[in-house]
Every structure is written in C-alpha cells, then in structure tokens.
Image 1 (spheres, one colour):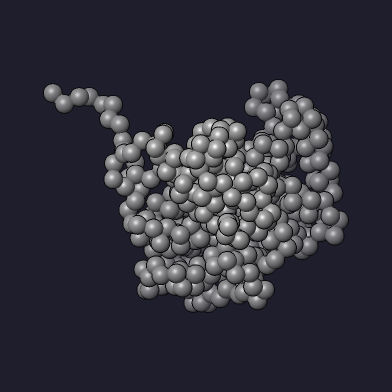
Image 2 (cartoon, one colour):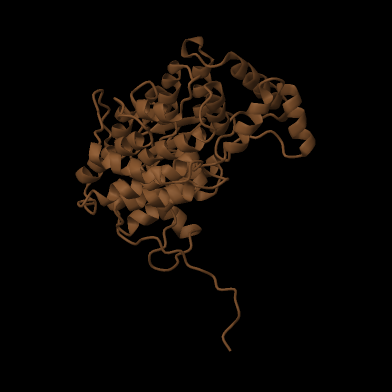
Length: 400
C-alpha cells in the first residue's frame, strides 16, 4: 500500500520523463517486472517508487561520472504538475489566501499556522538602513536587498549554525529585517506591509496590499530554477543561510531570470492608452510581445492566472485603464499565437496598476524567492556535503 502522503513516489508522467520513454512504455516495464506500480488516493493512474525508477534509469541510461556528481535532486518542497503549482502538496493558489509569514513557515516546516510573526531587531534594521542610505540614489531594490542581507548577517554571530531550528528562526528574522530596512519609516506590522510601504507611491491605492500578499506567496518557490540550484550548491558546502541566500540573489540578478519582467513593464506602460498600437509596434520591431509563454507550463501559468484574477476584482482598487489594456493584450496575443501570460506579465501588470516602483517585479520576485531558497537549503543541509561536482570536458590546447 502506497504511503498516504505520496512522498518518494512518482506519477506515471514523472516516471516516463525520468526514464525518457512514453507512459505506455512505463506500463510495459511493469508487465515485465522491471517496475512495481501502486495506487494513491487522489492521483490518476499508477505511482512508482522513486528509488526503483532511479535504479532502472541508472541501469539503462545514466552514465556514472566522477565522485560527487549529482544527476537528480530529490525535493519534497515544490511540484509543478498538470498546470498547477504545489507547495508541500498544497495548491499554491489556495495558499495565497493565507498570510505570507504563515506560508513561509509552512514551506519550511510543513506546518500551516495562522499566527506566525517574524520579528526584526530595530538596531539591526537601522544599521541596514544606514548602509542602504549610502548607496546611489537611483540604486535598484535588488541591490538594496543584497546589502541588507550582508549587513544583517554581521549582527548574527550564531549564523553558522545550520541546524534545522536555527535556520528557520534566522530566516524569519532576516525576512522581517530586510523588509523593514527597505522602508524609510518605522517597521510595519507585517512583512507585506513593509514591502508595500517600500514600493508604493502617493497615488497608490492602499488596497493594493492584498494583491501584493498574493504575489509574494505565489512567487515563493518554483522548483529547481537556476537560482535555486545555485542555493543548493552553496548549501552543499555548508555555507550559512545568509551566504546561501546571497548566492541565490547573485544568480537571480539577470535579464533572463529575476529581471525578466522589466521589458514587460516598459511595454505595458506604452500599451495603457492604445494596446493595439503597442502590440503592432512590438511585432514590427520583430521582438514579439514580452511576458507570454513559459519553459515549464504548456497551457497556463497558475501564478499569473491567479494574480490577474485578483487584480480584476474592483474591490482591490487597481487602475481600470491598466487592467483593461492588459486584458486586450492577453486576448490578442493569446488568440494570435496560441500562448498565455506568465508571471512576469502579471507582476508587471500589478506594478503598473498601482503606480509602483518600476523595479517592483524583480524586487518581489527576489524577496519572495528567499522563502523557497531557505527551504531548499534546509533540504540540502540534510544531504551529504559537497555532493555537486560536475565533470568538465577539457577542449583547450593539449599539453606538449
């Protein structure tokens, strides 16, 4: 009988992807006695033990390389399956109705509590603000986050404790500290309130705090993205949490990852008055309309779908002109190119709809993703250290 929570089990599609075969071939392996199938309540089709699938993959296709090389990373944090995003088996869209702190604690521990609070030391917050104040006036929020993480770490002498309880405590403290350091006034009551105070303008409708809360939860993790892989490599060296998060921030700071929403924001700002003309300009330039499609999802990005749904609700006070323009763009581009808006498009729409800082999308993305990075660090700390050793293939000048 399969475990009721489904841990260490792969669905038929996951097993097929790992083995590089069609689902029909997986069942052929079962009939030949190479795999054992079982059933799990709530899952269509059969499920398979991950160790058994890995053993079969290793026997037929996986090449054994140098000691320390890792071919697959097992994780119990995030699942992307059939157009849905799950955190520890719970739909991320459903979780987005809970406070950000509660979801962060759930991603780290598996416990969903309603009264989670993260506290920051006012002295450390002030020191972080002083350091941020020395930066160039037009510095990006991403740069400010990095500085705040580094400064905060120097005030945590026990940060080198990579034990589970210590890391969870430090992560909550750090999120509250960084959020408060980005604000030029007294710390707010919650992480989301501090972030909102840091990105809003005088014209921003305060009801935008609710969509912000949704966005933070939905962006908390997305599996083994490039930055998350960097985090796990750092954690495998037993780097402390602050250094691990710094590795993630370094990896995410690029136009193809954390900054991918920048061109979407610029496009939407030109599309508010005349979305059709803005689309025509993009097509004429040959660059296409940014913010559509995804390398993982094939039909829909559940994060974008939910955030856009929330933004369309009049109760949240988003600028109607921005939402109307975004909807025209979505309809035209989706119909013409058989595609869908992704999270970059949704974050850019959120930014335009409340008149927020232009770099809000990348800031929210990086800040929220520290939740997932912490969870992956916790997992990696439980693995054998220094297990990542990718064998290089030398192609330079031969000796002699």
